[in-house]
Length: 533
Image (tube, rainbow, N blue to C red):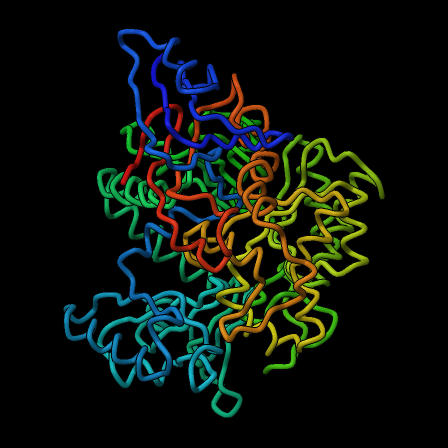
């Protein structure tokens, strides 16, 4: 036996909820469970012994939907989240400070602002940004990561003018009086800007820089108790980055790639399918987009938003196009993951899945919905009948919930993210943060899955709350199922991977409000301690 962890509370999360005090690991997998004395008798002269000192071990927490490389890229960007900025001047003062610090011509980047958290309740515009930074290109990414805003120099560098047309699946906002771009871009227009900057920068930083970026990001994930992340927007350049980091021995956690369909031709041409790879880096589903984001009000909805521009959001492609793509990738044998937030977007998604699965199915390829925010009762039943799994983000309640009430109204806001109904109907849910959209901390998601409380303190549909045990299982067993990992992860049982998350206390034994304060003490991947306090 290679290593024994003892003197802890080992929560297996098996069906019976069995608890042990010690676990043994051989060749990266669980080989024994029992009391401290039982495991001590199995140790050899070369066995490493780790005293858990009464802490609480769970199966490794698994992010079902995240963006690790984007998170790593934005680590140096200004944090414009609601805890840091309250009004437009707060944003502009931070931009001004960066302007004074950096030489003219240098890009200034910020992320995680939301207009509905600002006193002015509007996006920053090119005019606002030009006033404090006329000689530096500035880009600020919305917290949804479905929008951004640029100053005039940044618009010029991106070639966006009054003559520019909104791309398919995107919006270039323009002043109705002058026809000039306001600087605010949505969805595909935003993605075009981000991709240009991201790809240019990671190419320029070279292999050492890319490994440092990805390695640090994965280390930060491990520090938050995470042993796995499904990266929800992988393209050839980021797959290369993961491969480089893995080869350098710096990839601290397991990665499951969700491969963007518009750049997946190299995978399909080589017939590299879902499941290919190693236990540390594995090809996952093809990622499609049905609509935009709820936070920037571009998710495709049947009832118009109550906020400007009072429309019904944005479809990234037509229903017919989505159906044809799903037929294509399904026939090739890929798992498919579709971003769908609004009820119209979810309806198109379910139509596409029904075209390949029929109205009822066991869904052998485990096609998924990413987010599924407006999964209203009729849509929920359709998804359950086809056994469609879903990755969900409970943390959105605590960060973005007030924006939902403003955009949807109280009645519809109460119907968003119906976790309990999803579970009752038999839909498997995997939990995540969608980082960097929201805070990378599963403890916050656990709290918000139970409390469903907005930043202002409003609770949305308490009857849809999960218990703390259900929330933990969504972060472990649920996420494992979504990535075909239930035979390797999700519970602590003999033969499964020795991926563990260790906390100072059991979240199930505390008030949910206190859970974010529980320290993580250790993260173990494949029997190796990749982080400890």
